[in-house]
Length: 379
Image (cartoon, rainbow, N blue to C red; front, top):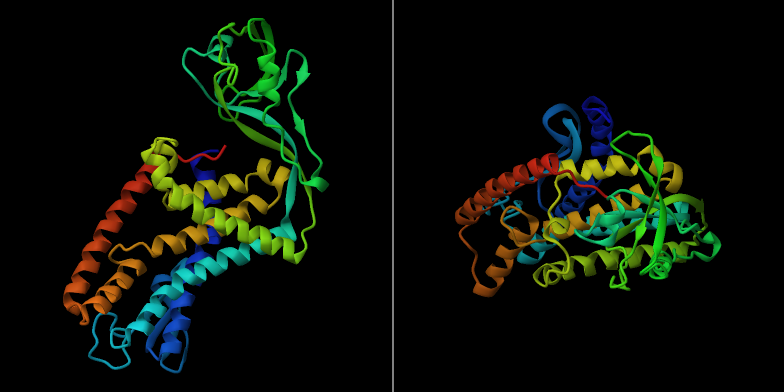
């Protein structure tokens, strides 16, 4: 895909994917602020500069802005408690609720997206292919001529394509390839693989022959890491309770994964590059790949909608991190106030958040550069 096509497809995906997630986040802050009696001066759809003032209801202006991404809420006195209707003048409880309402809406939104995805767009893969992700240096696979990206079609004439019954929601047999290659340890082996020699190149079948040494590791005779390529899927029907239960399981898995990542990194169970942060460019690239014709033909909209649900949950969790300028950083100051029994000087708090914003913007710029120089891939 050339640069122009990438931009042409990427911009709408960027708006469709991230825009609503940012909108519901700000809607959470807006609704909580109204409930708390905080004066909301403006609720803007999109980001400034302002395009048009839509209307004014009560004391709040509703505006449409030129950047079609998310929304924003402008409250009176976010760090200035001099006005009794300002955010800063409210009780600790209402300030905390107003700040936490944004991430909460992201959690709720992610759960709703996942539930609807399973209820109306659920598919289950019916055909899988083994795809080589990486080849260990000096391994039997390297000597045979296997390459990352190769799809293994057969081993010694045995079909390696996995087929499952969607009605039973079966999973592919992950050990079929290992079992077949174990039988070839110390013997000749013939593999037929599908190989694309470059981006956009027409895949071709390649036959590889050789031997797996007698001293090869029986748990990994080839010495490769594998992923599954989904080549066919079938629509399946979820009842509402099933959709809710599956969505809840997905939400729980996101929380568990994020909690486990630091420990997995320290123990070196996962490489650092797999846990790298991803910015808007990387998220958009993944979104584009999930609405790619090949993906939608085999799996429909379910992968894209699941990704949107996961991103909504991760956005909520990210905003709760105790980092200045984020909701979590502001909540941290409220907790410090509760422990000390008195408020941190609003001017000092404002300065801390300003510095935090500069650091976050700098970090975001670095992540964007990483996304461009070293693109994220899910294939």
